[in-house]
Image 1 (tube, rainbow, N blue to C red):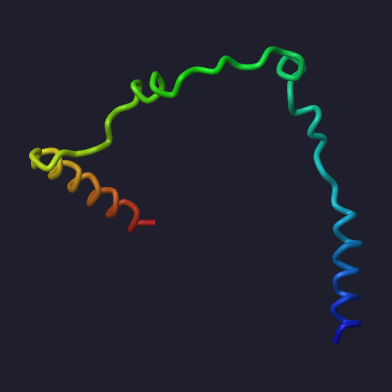
Image 2 (image 1 turned 60 degrees about the vertical axis):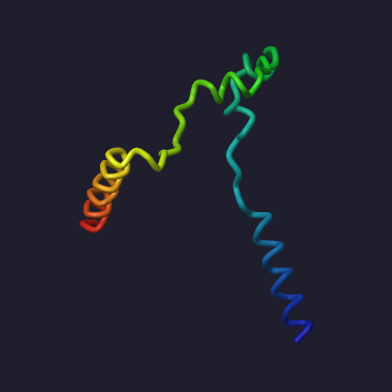
Length: 80
């Protein structure tokens, strides 16, 4: 059993060396390789730009609209 397992692992190891990998060095533009680091910004400013996804309990119209939208999406997904 040990010989079969080790032989299978040796074959897998040998075959994995035959894979062709894309030339990754060409995928990165030279301006990004030698350019400056991006500026670090505080996360508070980024979070302030996003919409608050929470729905308050006292807004039944928004809940009903969301329920209708989700039901419509579910119906569309069932068609596939």
